Image (cartoon, rainbow, N blue to C red; front, side, top):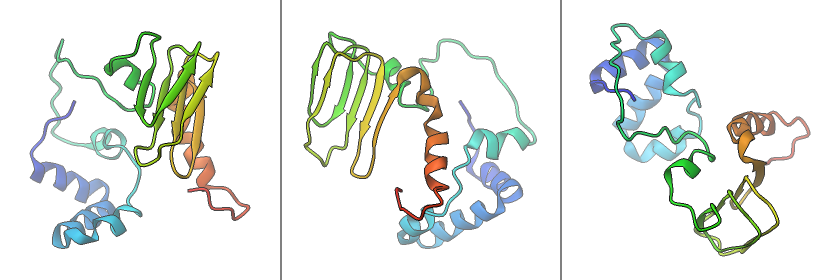
Length: 159
């Protein structure tokens, strides 16, 4: 968990990620530009982009804050209440027979049924442009999959 003053964080963005800082300032000047500018914003996390090189940082040990870093699909299984089979279903409808310990997320704007049979410990994410199915244990690797899709050389547009 990070706590900071906005002006201090912006100073670190200016020092360590000047291009992103310029994008933030452009959004501040014209909030309507957010969708356009955000598409080209870097995907670097604040941990790597700012905190690793930040000066004047203090670390304070803390226990039992009730905090969970929801940084992956799998982590939702730790913070949301599962059904009787240990599944988390978000968004659209799901019909699961003998399905356990899985996360099923369907885009709220779609009403397509996600049906599962005899599977366990999966992450299933169904959106308008992609269907992701992976073992829960590999959910942290989704970022690498997205990067690979972006690098596809055959010219087909996935994302």
